[in-house]
Length: 401
Image 1 (cartoon, helix red, strand yellow):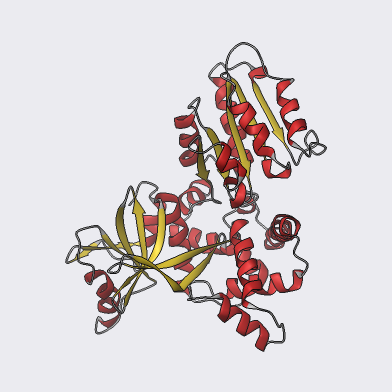
Image 2 (spheres, helix red, strand yellow):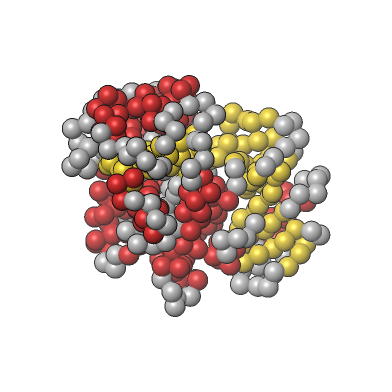
């Protein structure tokens, strides 16, 4: 198992705090394994085995539990009268009205509740109403580049970056050696997300159209993308559809964490813009599995990797608009922004590329940090307060900002 210190530390910090701990993220990103590691830590710290009660609702014990009373009964029968009981529920969205059982467990003084889910809607509706202000979400992703590096010691960052793009960032896939095995494993994840987490939950009937939209997004990572553009493109290719249908499918793909949408934000007008949003994939290995070896702009692939890393490090990430210029990413933590421009290379004979990439950052009229991340293997440099960094060093440094 690959140790995930960033997420383990969050679980430790919230241990026995008066909130439900909710781990969300795409299937097979490591949620169940993380909880297994945490349970082992609890045992090592002296918690009795019988006070650690876990249930995987997609496993043998949980497959027949389909409604909230059954879920609650499972734990009530096992809760110990003495000491704290640590409650772990995997893939909780499998049970209808699960929030009622979770709320009943939460109000018990000797229960510390942890649960996982593979759909972002987990924290909407009744759960949000019942547990308003009483839960904390830990958003989990597949392996970060630094975690991937730690799992493959002794190799150069450049070689590992290429493997990270093609071998996949899913923990188990990253440990496979054969390309065919990796494709088969990723295909299983993809089919489960499409068939179970999207079609099964949304009752969608046009699987072919959903897969075409997915292919379109994989093929247009980092490009401005709208439901109208997708609908027009697919209709022109013989797959007639409507904007509302595409919007519905895009929402489902985001709910299942297969894609993330970065909205544009006008830094001067202080408002989100309806157009110009971009979609980024949760894993570029999935892109290769779906599209084959179809080439993709290296800059957009790098942009995708940086975006996912910013999601890990910051509270929110959006695309910045400054007049007519665009900043690749504005990352916000505790209300304070940090600006990032991403370019595969800025080296040319006359320096024009460097000036072009710096221009949007120079247009920002505040004193927050500004970064230019590139694949150029040069020492860190400062351009009027804008820090240029080698992006692989930045990605590999878990504590970088």
